[in-house]
Image: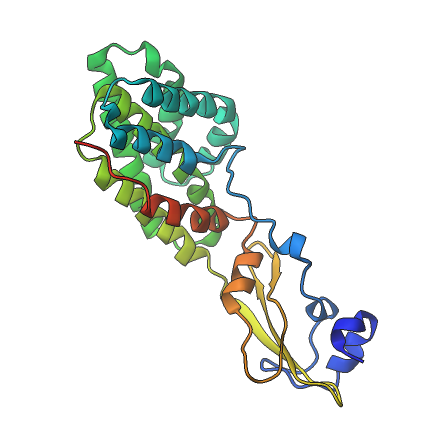
Length: 273
C-alpha cells in the first residue's frame, strides 16, 4: 500500500525509512498540501495589486500618453490615489514598524499626501514627486542592508505602495525622464525581498515502502513558521522541486508578492520619452 493512500500509516512507515536529513519525520511531513493550499499565493498587498497599477501607468506613458495628461494615464493615476487612500491605515501601520526613522517618516508622508496629489499646483507637485522618488530610493537602499527576515518582510510589503505613488506622482507632474531607472529600482527591491526571504530551513525526504518505488519530497519552513511541501515524485528518475516547497512556505510573506511582481515589471513597456 502506497504512502499516498495510507496517510494514517505514514508515521509508522517513515519510522523505518532513512531520509536525506535523518530518520522518521513529523506526521505532517507525510502529506504534501492540497493543490488549493499550495496555490494560495496572493499578488495583493493591503488589498491591492500595486504592480498592475504601476504597469497601467507605464503602459499609458509608453503608448504616448505623455506626462501630465491623457485619459488612460489620468485613470491609472486616480486608481493609485484611491488605492493608497483606502489602504492608508494599513500602510502606515507597517511603516511605523520600520526601524529607520528617515524611511519611516518619508513613507508615512508620501502615503498621507498622496490623496492631495490632484490638488497640488504644478511647482508643488514637481517637488513632492521628487521627494517621493527619493523616499522610494531610500527604502530600496535600506531594504538592501536589512538581514532580519521579519524586517525585510515588513519593508517588502511597502515596496508596492511607495513605488506606485512615485509613478503616479511623476507621471502627473510630467517627470517622465528617469522612469525606466525607477522601474529597475523597483525590480531590484523585489529581487532583494525574494533572495532574503527564501527559506534556508529545508529538508529533502525519502520514503521507501517494501514492494513500492521510492518517494521523495521537499519540506521548507519560512521564517514565520509556515510549512511548504513540494509535490511528491516517485522513482529515481526525477527529483522533487525544492523551489516549489520554498514558494509554498513563503506564500504569506512579501516574497510571494515579489515573485509574482518581478516578471510583470521586467516585461513592462518603457515609457515614451
